[in-house]
Image (cartoon, rainbow, N blue to C red; front, top):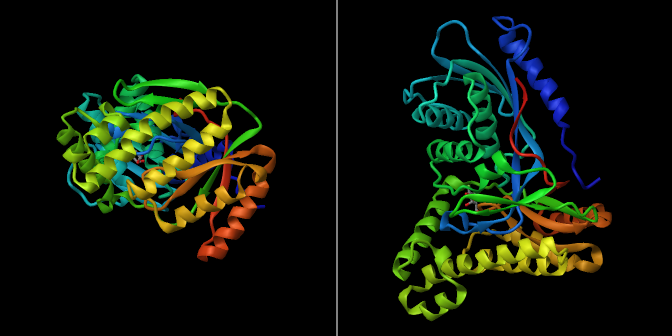
Amino acid sequence: MSIETAKPLADVVVGVKKTFADKFGAEKFSAGPQCVTAAPGRVNLIGEHTDYNDGFVLPMAIDRQTVVAASKRDDGRPVVRLYSMTMGGDAELSLEPDGAELPGWAKYARGVIDAYREEGIEVPAFDGVIDSTVPLGGGLSSSAALEVSLALAIETLAGVSLPGPQRALLCQKAEHRGAGVPCGIMDQFSSALCHKDHLMLLDCRSQEPHMAPFTDPSVSVLITNSNVKHELTGGEYAERRQQCEAAAEALGVKALRDVTPEQLAANASKLEPLPFKRARHITGENPRTEQAAAAVAASDWATVGELMYASHAAMRDDFEITVPEIDTLVEIAREIGPAGGVIGSRMTGGGFGGCTVTLVRTDKAEEVARTITERYRAATGIEPTCFTTRPAEGGRVLEG
Ligand code: GAF
């Protein structure tokens, strides 16, 4: 089998509740946690690095989740104690930010707690256990899944329920703080707001998600992890964002969303060659994303495929966020082509490693995954991981 399967959600929930009982239950709540929440990772079909340019993205939630089981503490200590089964580690966070050193994963929790407190929401002291089936560092928003599932747990324990977009924005703030990455809104909106069987066409300026049905059983989404580490804290992401903002300023617009490819070409002399290339990716990617949403709605898969390859080429040549292994994966998919069941393929997420997203004919998915695995291994010596997913449901409270 070249296609990997994840532990079903129900089994993850059982495991998290059992671990919660083992770690914290004996002290106070032997009956189990007061709430259990889940939030998914996401895959972006097209529209990369457009979110912080006020543009369009077309993600969906994946069938991989981060689950949190939590209960309020009753001993009066103003702390949050967390145990991550994924990372195999504990963390104790004071409710007041105290500058204490924390493991990387717990910095996201610090960010969420602080964002809610700053919003005027009283975060209770609590204990929580976390587990996840979202691959870490694969560009599939494992951090947004952690933030949104923790946010839902905090809201449930605090007795409040924020509108989804507000929750997503607080989680974006947590990401800015926790990882120090000035990300856009796509990942947290996807994890908080996506719906089963739908893509989300998000206008990142109005922040209004438009849910577009994606139910054709003959088309599947194949995610291939290059297993080349995706690390956005290296400064490249912030540098791209800064280059885009500088290009918008030089062109006299609020954001690159306001520039068409034709306007960019006509104003090329206002930009140095590097910012021009960055802007060319963004100004092309926005219309590609809207066109792709329309093509999915019309089941015009050939057009969707062409747009995905064009998006990848722009990320590789103009935005320069791909790595050779990722380019190899997309090339292999393109070689397999429509006759072998591949509709289109591109890198997904922030870049510099991580995953590709490939639309495939469902009846050929297993064969495509096998061919990609064999050829990628032969070309790079690295073992990739492949899985298929349908559009899944966004973050929700499962119990509590
Ligand atoms: C990362 C960021 F978190 C998103 O906001 C988005 O910019 C993406 O990279 C690129 O499209 O996932």
